[in-house]
Length: 537
Image (cartoon, rainbow, N blue to C red; front, top):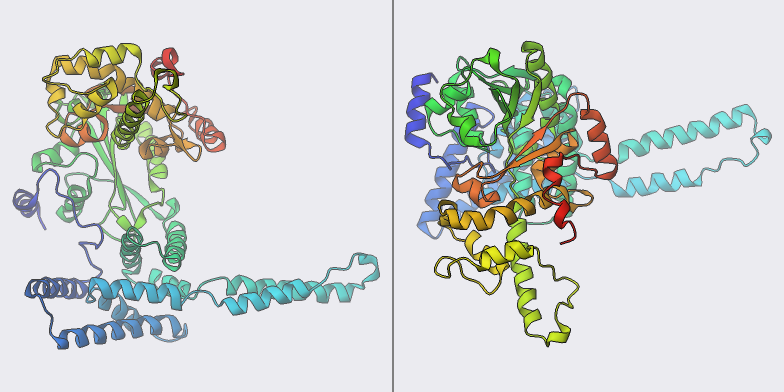
């Protein structure tokens, strides 16, 4: 694919919110698999439109399932000395011919039928517990002691192997097979898709084991840090367009700007998955830490790179759904920081301009629940009001007054929290264009956003997923920015607020350790000022 083809493809297919289907990779293992995958999809679509499928279709589906299942079994059962390439090809290519239901059925069979031999594990544990270490070693001869420990070592060795599930053989063999690592990533994406709908213990165990294997095979030492430029193949650039998850690339000019002067894009590549990034990060070279995404995406022209003092990370996206939960981003950021610092010593600040994807979900839930509790409270006798343990007026008296003072034709509600909820849930987001509404909403939104980032936690760590990612990498929360992302996505996720995280090279390891150890969140005085006057509210 050349640049002209990419341009035509983007004009024909791209819309700002278009996202690829992540449950099934759009880039199958081989051309043969691709054709079979496409043919199978067309058959499924045709079948879905016809209503009733013929009995022959059911029989054919069962035969296809049995054929792929048999090839999977052969790939596991064959000796190392036997030729595996054809068998592994039959399995990986045959997998794409299966219907969605048959893929689910096959993965469940792999999880349940090729798990541990628990009878063997129990027997080995019984043998191990039957060995006794003498209380007085002086009464045991060296030969007896050697024999005893020989028995321990033998059973321990057997136990280690017995605790490895049988499907590990399939994973290991696919990993060394051309295209196999890519295929394993696709398998895990589909496992995660099933687990999102059904909580199946055996499938969770399969996913956990495969995730652990992928984490080992995709260690930073095995990955190549590649600077993605306009001169890269169009097939690679297409993937950047398809998988940009934070700020969608709207057209070819937008893509060219993000790869041009004053910008950098870096991705992790693996030799077993050529021409396809596992994860990539976009960087803007700026004079100061940006406060809005508009100035990052649309500053024209960019400043000369020699004048830049800040490297701003404004987007990081995973291109492999099957690698979810494997923290490649941590290593990517640290390597990019070192590379940029080496290339441009005049860069002194490394920061992000990040979304806050969970803020509005948390806030609206809080407003809704507290509004209900407030209504219930008002129905009680005066002497019994505000007695609920769970009731919390999350607004200050000044914020409550400002919201209740708004004209009733544009803001309705029995109390400030209800007014705020009604304004924020309006799908038209008219409030962002009204100075009067903005004036009433900005103070509580900024204060509650600071609270959300610094105080709301899950299992001792930041509730917000992006915050947790940067904090565990050693960043500090520097600043929250009002009206930083006025897109529909930005308004729906965080009311348009974005946050700057700063990576201080001298403190990264200290901050990361502190966060891991006790959940301590490092934040600037700028953030704390939102909380100090009303920390007990």
